[in-house]
Length: 210
Image (cartoon, rainbow, N blue to C red; front, side, top):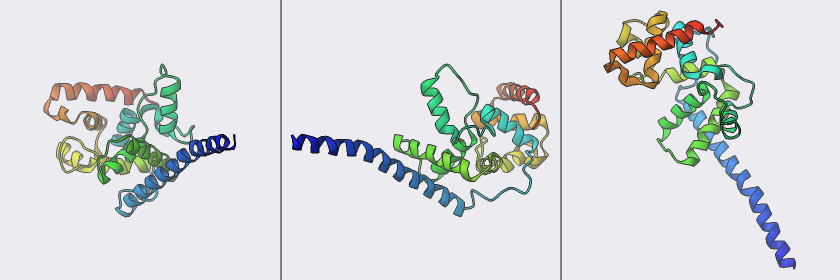
């Protein structure tokens, strides 16, 4: 009888301990990845101007939709996963900027698509939300975003496409730039590119000003 109790106790301890230890290890790895990005200069301190440029606003609406600056949950990626599991019929437009930045950081380190790495990215996104504002995360992400040609980043894309800096783009140009983030190959299909840019421009125009 005592042996059975011992076995049951060991099993219960394992059931509790293994998830806790796994979470702690993944959380530490996520923090280490963020620290590496900070040392590399990918992540910086508070921006001197938190007002979004026209291009940044178009991208925030096109890419992140209702999740932008929505800090009603302690971690938006986890809240999104929970909502998807418990309320599959409820849709929220866009993923969070913390998810996009976390994915970029981990792709820079090692393009690993395992389930373990996926959970680590989610935990990194949670930590990013604790340390940085959405504007900071957006600018860090855009500094290395892919718009269909090298070099990466919003500034090089604006210069190559429109011959001026990203902060100087007008609403039409900003919508065209935003259209490339999910479909970089649209550069080679002007008709579809213009149509997607038009839809983004309509969404931006219909969104309330910050």
